[in-house]
Length: 249
Image (cartoon, rainbow, N blue to C red; front, side, top):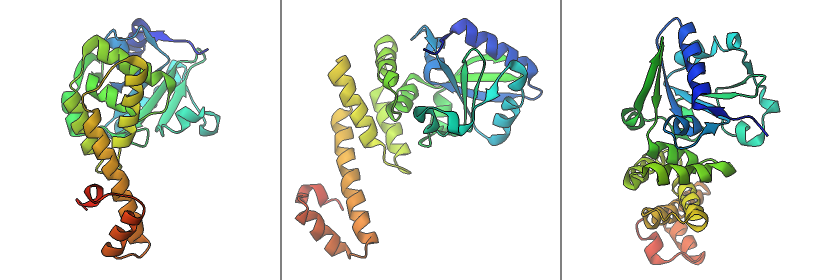
């Protein structure tokens, strides 16, 4: 079992890192790290940091070797971490893992301007400024990953702090303009309700949006296969989609 790291451990690392940076860098902390600093969980196995540009990420990463970190080779990563698509995954001999991302996390969600605006300053450590993404964005990020512990983390955030569910829904809609995430978030929140007893009020809306995503994808696929709009709609009807489900197309 991998070692977990407390708020003090993480704070000591940030102090050391900030003292080494030669230029100001801003990092956005999400996941377990943000939860630890908000006292929503006692410790975390890894620290996820997002940067808005490659230059900031590279500046930060350039000093990690001096702190005992070694960059992991992609072929040696566990599947759940390889799929996250980090710009760099670093670890120490004590198994402290540091995942660095540039704007996009898990090849899925983007650190949008609205997420940046919602973030809160954790502290300034020398040249390193660290901001915590909001509770709502922690929940959203953890809703599109496929790790067992993420469900427990979502429950901990909701129970300890409460969240603005409409804000989560709206950000999910924004992010789904590039790739539809309504179904992923819906499925995760259904399991949250079934296993943790937390009934997210946005479930009905997410279900409708997820169903639309399925219809839209089927319609687009038929157009790409050479069908006309009329033929594609007729084929969807033959597949069992009702007039109500396809009328908006």
